[in-house]
Image (cartoon, rainbow, N blue to C red):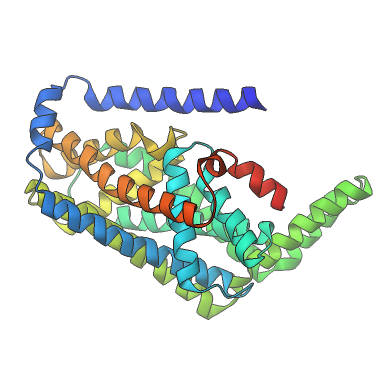
Length: 335
């Protein structure tokens, strides 16, 4: 297990290093730094504050998906979402997701399987929103970018298929149950019971998708939260004095978040800079040095504040750094 974890970390680090090389190749670091210094700090502060509005709406979406299971107040979910972002930003293996699932179980007694299902639905909704952002922005932006095309062609079928599967399983729960029992029948009783138990937990976790009110709330809040995050990207463009429309921000947000499928190091270091700078340069015509400076700064704006706040909330939960490194273990123990 330790060897597999080591290989996974090494692979992610190597991929991040490769994309950092792509982002910086043939560029002068001094020119990139000079461009960074031109950013107006006031705009960056506004962007960081707006980003927390997106975090709150993400918590609202999670609440919609959880309401059919158990009602959790928004002021209790928002810190867990911030902790999840922090964990994903600083530690590999999506530790933040495991940590917020564990805390949801510990604090509100929501079973691990059901909470995990809602998080998987969230990620699927995110992918669909990103694809729609890209398609919408391309109606208004004349851009030729292999980066955008490649990421969209790969990610769109994955997320569209996933959301259709979730909706089908929510509408027809007997499909999942029949499949689980068919798999479990020839297996030993204990193993078969685990499989059918998991199927039942997934069924309960999808309960939010069976309510038109909860489903529409989750979908609408998904678009609102990512529209707010796109506003952060646009605000940082103002910090640099870029004359770019909001649709460029939608395009950048959609592309870089779909690029999250690439198994890089925590926080998408390297992949983020390479993708954002490539899309910005292609969409606005700014220099590569300016595009990379923008990518580095906007990454800090959306990474640093929520990471600090998430760690603060983690301490308030009575946990410390070891909880991040043991997130998967804690989730497994709770399960």
